Image (cartoon, rainbow, N blue to C red):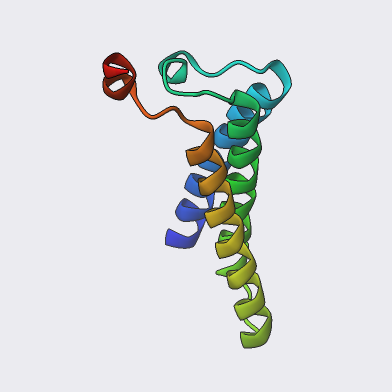
Length: 102
């Protein structure tokens, strides 16, 4: 039962994150709560898609029973999660406080 609940929760998060990434990638606009922080919305959208794919792959990797395949899937999903996070970080501005000083 807990596997089904976690699968549904991860699926909802992955879909919402992927939709936000696709919208940022195709339109070049950020969500209203991110507009003050994003310098490059298309780069953020690419990172969001990569991050969402990494989350989905990590959830799939939790269901793989073969140890060698599980290690490969886990390493790949971890690389995708880190790469997506780095892309999203690079796409953000330094912040409003730092922009006010300079």
